Length: 482
Image (cartoon, rainbow, N blue to C red; front, top):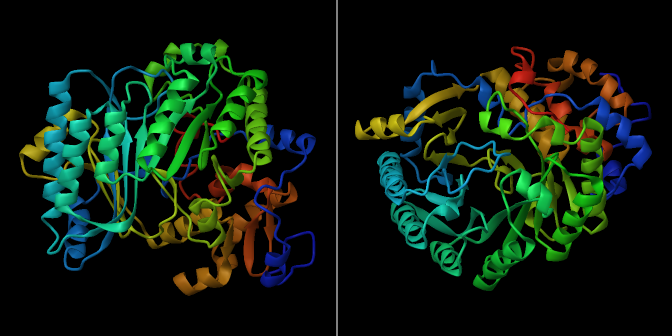
């Protein structure tokens, strides 16, 4: 196929020698118009197809058969555990959560959660080896220290854990005690993701999450003293009352704390999906152009502080394993964001949790009574699912390579799927020409590559390969890309 780039193609080895560092930045005045131009609704591509394509008409027996098929071997697995409970409602929240301080209600959930874990494990002749585990929510640290220990012990009795396993947990510093952290280390957690959102007091009040900086720093100090080796801080841009002047103080405070990774998420304002977000007045949100400026400020500040911009919403120290994984082309993206372990089957436990075995996704029910009912009947509580077609697999590979590794190797694609990339995606490549003209992509004979500028627009690039992007009203399903 003829090269579409405006310059002569180079050999891959020549490009690698000339590759700029991950912290390279486009000029400010050059970038802002493009950020505004490409600020459209788009999936985050934590999966392909996006979870909006999952269906209750799915043949659930196929998923269970895949689990049983794995049971004949001794696979390496990833595990996700969903713990939905929080003690207060954060107005910005887009998670599947339950606001409750009823300890009996939480205890009941944990009883059923352990039952689900045991039920899934019955399919395995030998204990699988867990190489990665993540507890999300909700707020996993809304559990008591004893509950963390009890659930962790149940998981370790049910599965074998690799000594090198990455075991991470989401932490809410509010209500966290040193006993929580000691329980986490006993379970084996070695990574922690701590929600900050914004250190500005007015912003915190407006989103109903008052969390002073010293509270966050105390949580981090406990984690580091206990031996948790990697700390991630989560920020959100686009929240009420945020300005460049206020958010830069948050960004500078975060760099002073020196976490290993930083995530700066776009506030997904979707009140048609999460009605509680109506508690946030539209008049208090930054304008689209102000929101774009917040993103630009975030990237500029963090890269100047020495963090590598991996793309999408993630930053990492050059010494961090995420940075190394992208350089080694082993980075992957799943429902927990970016991960260093590619290609592992994922068992997911708890209400709303999404797992994947081979080419099949399965999502649990989202309501507690139905979750309990199915487990009482001795059934895994799956509600929706999706089995990838051959076309889906090609598109998933392409989108994930672009999202994670910033390029597609056409020879590797041909080896995996047995057809020519340019021929199969002929229309998509034509649709991408305007993005290439804007400097977001480079088209080469052997690769399709995201430029430094294109890292800001990975969701837009992914949409070009998404066969489902026009099958529904994206504005009613997805958040803004920028």
